[in-house]
Picture 1 (cartoon, rainbow, N blue to C red):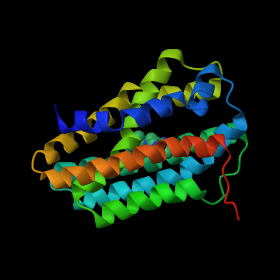
Picture 2 (cartoon, protein in one colour):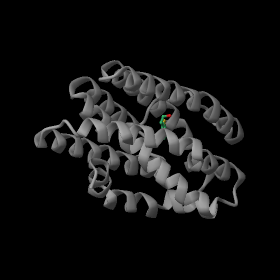
Picture 3 (tube, rainbow, N blue to C red):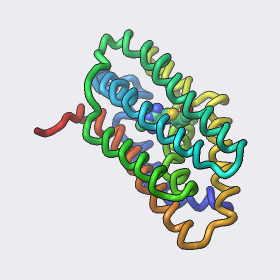
Picture 4 (cartoon, rainbow, N blue to C red):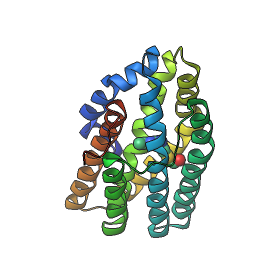
Length: 216
Ligand SMILES: Cc1ncc(C[n+]2csc(CCO)c2C)c(N)n1
């Protein structure tokens, strides 16, 4: 069993909860209110900016030139996704993207940035991995059914596509290679970060579903 198999299995329960979440079942059957999707798009543009910074830090701390190139390219890809896809979706949804990050978005991006700065390279990679991996698996599963809503179908096509699967495979491959040199205690830390950010992935969908705002 590879380390990435172990990682996936360690948070498979969280992935199952993500798949069953009403935000995602609503995307596929088209019943998700546009208001909740709009909330997601707004918060995701804040998230992607933070995530891109986390990947750029990881690129700077990477052990090889190839790894630096990979994560720097993915950081640029996250910014491009934010700018292109979200600008387009926001126009269709007629939403304003100027709002501030909500509680879950800020907590998730703060955790990512704290881990890539304060932890080892492997720990940082463990923290950023669920974002890639859960999305690719969710995208793949949603692609099978798509959505009667053209807006949701477009979003599903992007994350379920082959191009994105290759991006995920590359990041998972780095994790397996780096894990070969890790002490058991270090692997435990990677597993803990991976589980935490998997939970944040669920919370991110849930925040959009609840139209979460700051309570005070
Ligand atoms: C909350 C949230 N989690 C994951 C993604 C997906 N995602 C964003 S950037 C990237 C990899 C580099 O381009 C991936 C997989 C998202 N959009 N929003």
